[in-house]
Image (tube, rainbow, N blue to C red):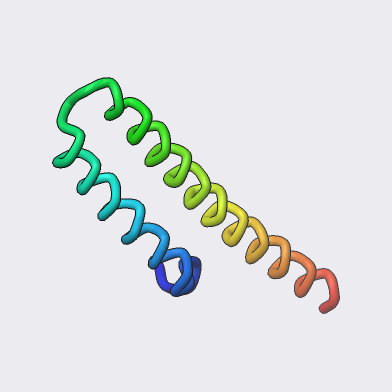
Length: 69
């Protein structure tokens, strides 16, 4: 897992989760919770995209290495 997530990604995940939890307890279950949930979902989507990019890049690199052989 650490091969695909660098320190920056893990830090963003932690900060996003902490801020979402803090917003949940300060705002409560109100209309603003929908906004906070949207921000959390966008962050999760970006993290998933970065992971998929990393996996795809690794696969392409392996294929190029095989072609060179």
